[in-house]
Image (cartoon, rainbow, N blue to C red; front, side, top):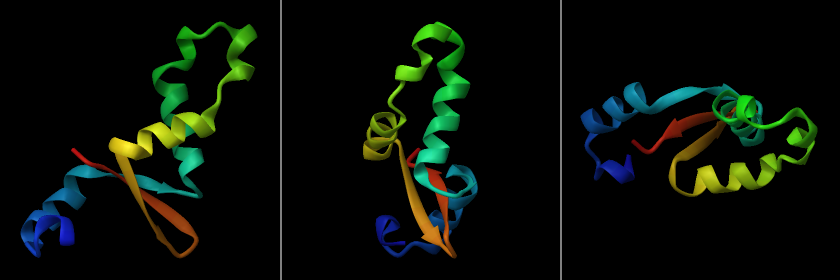
Length: 79
């Protein structure tokens, strides 16, 4: 709510438009996103070298954020 300067309507709209899903952790979300978007373009022999931790770090810098609640994380995009 602070991000929306106390405007409840804007905060509610952001939740409706930017909420992705609930995950066990941020890494689970990052791996799913990476696999959906990029894995089919990476040769099978080098897929084991994918660093999902680094990818997670990068996407949570500017593209996504999470809110932890009841042992799960809820993932939102900034836009």
